[in-house]
Image (cartoon, rainbow, N blue to C red):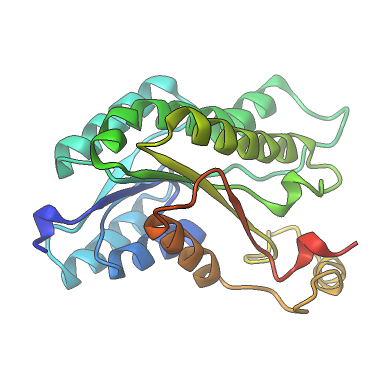
Amino acid sequence: MSVIDSKVALITGAGRRLGARIATTLHAHGLRVAVHFNRSSSAAQALVAQLNAGRAASAAAFAADLSDDAALRTLLAAVTQTFGRLDVLVNNASVFRATPIGATSSTDWDEILGTNLKAPYLLSELAVPFLKARRGCIINLTDVYADRPRPNYAMYCISKAGLVGLTRALARDLAPEIRVNAVSPGAILWSADASTTEQSAILARTPLARAGEALDIAMAVRYLVDAEYVTGQVLAVDGGRSIFD
């Protein structure tokens, strides 16, 4: 298949960390990738240069603030104009920070819920005509904390629980043309505020007794891209943590 005929995936928050690994994995699987970023311009541009060095015209970077509704429409238009199609939408971008009860603001609510939940909904809605034309799919990145809340992170947990609900609702509403699934990571990349004590406690509740890697999540996303008879599912990639009592 020529480059211009290959599938196209838009991955939000793909400039670094988990999103970048998803982008490189899908690219290695033969897809062209739209690398979205907000503040990670240098990292996103470096990633795109690396991917294009291996396969010309197979990647491009797109800047957008996902909390800005108008920017979402501009983002989708730019991606589809650049590549001519859209087959896969990966809603990976996420705001993760503590929001202790009594110490939060409406800004916290707007930014966390806006980026983590509202943006995936609106992007999915905007992408429907393009995905339907290709019988494509949407893959959302949720979190083990959607079901097992982390103390002092209520807004983040709410946003990820909502994303699980969104996944299942869209799977019903968009079938049979568009599949919608989610990947729920466990301990993959430690947050900056995760102490050694907290990390040890989490791994003690993980049956496989170790942290996972970004590649584990990226391969789950790749599977869902190809899983033609799977929709409305949340695939836990957490070392068994979700079954620990």
